[in-house]
Amino acid sequence: MSKVIVHADKATAAKAVAATIRDLIIAKAKAGQNAVLGLATGSTPLPLYAELVRLHREEALSFRNVVSFNLDEYEGLPGDHPQSYRYFMEQNLFRFIDIRRENTHVPAGISADASRTCADYEAAILAAGGIDLQVLGIGRTGHIGFNEPPSALDSRTRRVHLDEVTRRDNSIFFGELSLVPQGALTMGVGTIMDCRQVELLAFGTGKAEIIRQTLRTAPSADCPASWLKSHARCTFHLDPEANALL
Ligand code: GLP
Image (cartoon, rainbow, N blue to C red; front, top):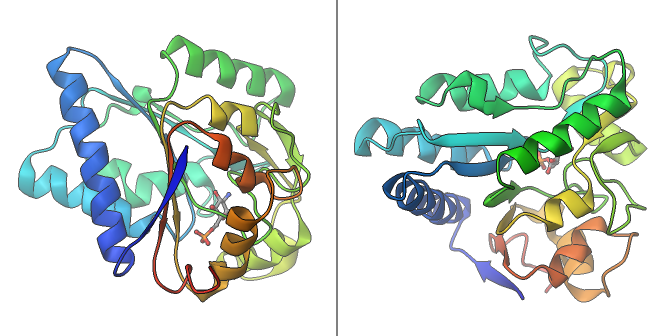
């Protein structure tokens, strides 16, 4: 079953999720295994990544046994584009920790055959043993990754068309709306539901209405995040502002 934790503020929430990730990495390392993390982008996970960097620097947390899979990538952007999610991960996490670059995965925004790229991504997740813990944000459309409504429970990694609300929300990073790609590659809802543990973060008044919808309406493709309520081990980490309408 899913559960909801309302934290004092987003820094506290980020520290709690970072501690969960630290414990997983350490337990896996003791067992001689990799920890397979699913990672997210956007402004929401930034305090979490800052805390993971702090744990690496000040508490010697090593990421040598971590394998990562990011949720999504804009279609058409190369990994060195400042708005690509590969670049985001480099700038906000990977370059500050000791993760092996060959262990990091982000769907390729440019490829000759997008459906092959998506199928290969699913295969790589399976080959890594599946995702132990997936970090999620939530879009104001109810998207997780880039699974815009409607997104079916059994959807897998695929090419998607971005909702205009999402393109407008993300245009602040691009400077203008016309520069925001129309499409993306994203893990599917089914891919996310297969993760053994899910930690969703939502902060601020801008997320209050979609959090209300997600938690108060029956699971459906119209609000893809609502499917998470039927996940065996999913926690919604909110700050008081995101919790305001519950
Ligand atoms: C993007 C990402 C999502 C993210 C969402 C929310 O569209 N694809 O994974 O959850 O934005 O972003 P923010 O955290 O900036 O509100």
